[in-house]
View 1 (spheres, rainbow, N blue to C red):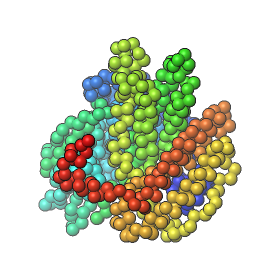
View 2: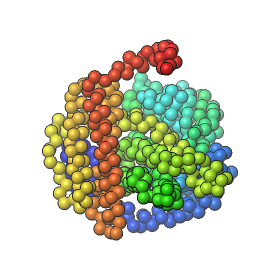
View 3: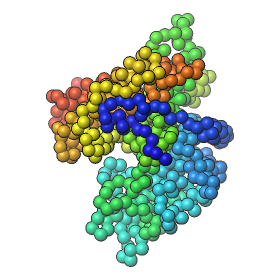
View 4: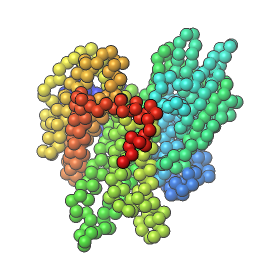
Length: 564
């Protein structure tokens, strides 16, 4: 299978090429039917077993739910029939998680952990041998699994603090250290733990697979969050936990990062664990907005007749359309190694947009948005769970790394990619784009022209920044311009993807699709314009944030500095 076309090609050249974006990937009809059938099956399964408000109230999953998920094969969605799995495509797996998350974000995320970064997903990255055989046997048995990466000191240190020390005879490793914020950590039977191995004078990243009943391994704490109530999550502790050498997957010497191709699986997993619940939340907010507006009036005039209300609802619909679009681009007609840049930025595109939608929906519903569903039910109002959706929407912006750091890291990876391609970083982008024949409305054609200008400008900004700041350490220390550039690249990708998906529709929905694209692209261009202004400010005389921060963090009386 050839590599899928990628938006990265446009950023490399600084030139908008319509042939890279078109035709927009479409789900095969047979695969769509499979996804539809599973979505209906999951709707019935969850509907019979899950009360989202009760889970939110108690922060506990229903008794027997995990066993039912296992027995129905939902913990093996990505595996083939030989392991008792469903053999789902990546996009249908995303749809399955989204469908379950529509009833309970916590249950959807349990499903995501298992099928996106748990043993069923990691199996594809394991070489033939004892480790693969062990993991395959656990998957076939329906084991619940977890991936333990984050530590007490945070998720952004280059090397894990948890260590794997070779035993004297070299037959095993002893694990020591702690992990925290581990999804499924307190219910998992099999855990993959990220560790640092120091051996032969080199450091190596290792993924160590162990059973939860291994001596020395324990659940140190069970964690609870402001959203995703009921999600199994734990702090884990290893105290001389012995793991056989054949159950450890090692990375390259002195190369920080996941052993390949686990890195590609981990990158895609953010879409399932974060973007799929975000998508479910956004769709529910759109439905709640429509229901609320349809039944309300002000001064005898239908609420939906007011200009501001029309803008709020149309922006939410357009944002949902854009979220769905970028996920399709990432997961349809693409392998694990394809479209890595799009996957890097789509986690943020989906979760930040979902937060924007949830916040907007709370405002639209006024008191009914801030009020809990239980309170509404008690007084006989429609129990739209907008307050819960707002809380649930906040977590995905943090899990899988914090949104502003992901923006910065996207720019870092983009710059590193350009630097590794001789000539691409130095070439002056052409002043023309190749989008002839794009079948778009006049408004969307203008958005396409603006996208071409934005891509050209972004290419110049990236190459100029790289030329001014060398070596790379100096460049990457300038975090704010990198953050802004990462966000600009994400917005431009979303804008181009939406136009590519919208182009050429001739069915009865074509007009509405063009209008959805126009609304989204208008908002995206406003955001990009603000980001360009922010980037320009980083090159001029900015406030001395470092000085003020040192003052505040150096023991000054904060209250006296901020007292009226």
